[in-house]
Image 1 (cartoon, rainbow, N blue to C red):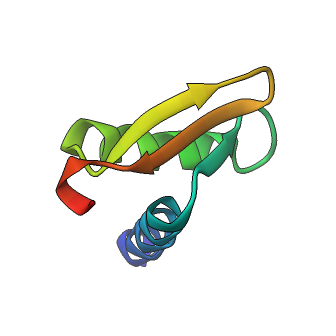
Image 2 (cartoon, one colour):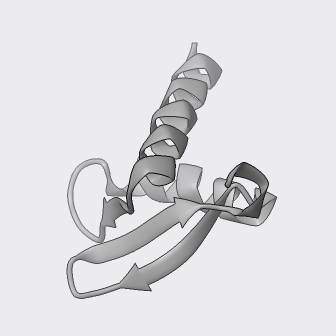
Length: 66
């Protein structure tokens, strides 16, 4: 069940990152879960970090998915 939820989250992040910058806030109730998923996607090359500010981090689709 947990793995299915992660796959759905990954698909949503990737679809958003292909269309526009995907924002992950630094604080909030979903921060830890999103950071774990995006950290793994960064290491796989699926996402690339394009910026950060005081509110959070911005990602785009990586080289494998452009």
